[in-house]
Amino acid sequence: MIKQDILIGFLTGLAANIGGVLLYVALLSEVDIDTTLKNAIANDYLGKIIALGAILNFLPFFVFLKKKQNYHARGVLLATVAVAVGIAIYKFI
Figure 1: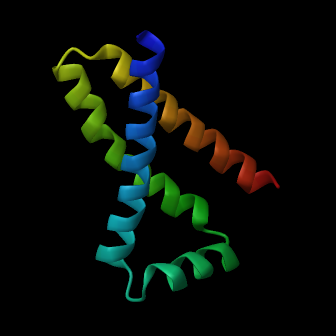
Figure 2 (figure 1 turned 90 degrees about the vertical axis):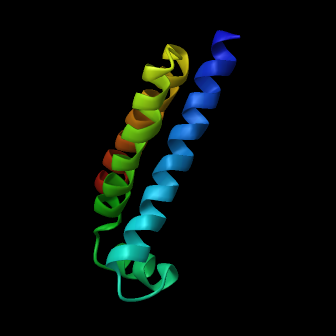
């Protein structure tokens, strides 16, 4: 049961991160998402967009904490750390 709760939190964290990236692109970019991501890859700022998308992880993290679903919140935190490690690996390769 605990592993399942962490997995649910992890998937929620990844979904929130993807939603944050889409929200960022929709609100602040003048072009569509495909063009924005291609420009981000070409100009080497994709990691920054993904990191800004991770800000949306605060919402499910604190909701889970408020509901006393600590293992779900732990999964969201794990997803945030996994994204940060992924960005670091992407930057060095």
